[in-house]
Amino acid sequence: MQLHEEIQQHLVRLEPRLQAEVLDFVLLLEQKQQQLLPKTATDEEDALKIHQQLMDQYADAFTKLAQ
Image (cartoon, rainbow, N blue to C red):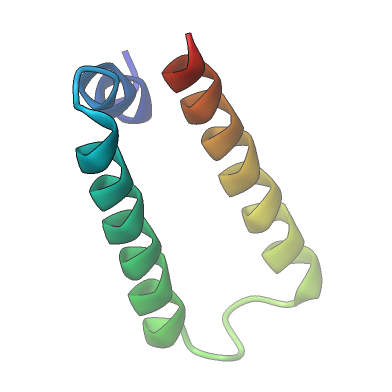
């Protein structure tokens, strides 16, 4: 099992208020990560790939939450 799948399994057991807190924390971590990355580390194409991967993971997470 991949880490994001394990996280999703735990997340679905939480009440919605706590799920929202987890989402807020994840968004904060993403923001910190973006600040730490050097500006030249990713070009536009790499950024789009990363964005697509994140969106796919969020879609999977929210699909599982909705079940």
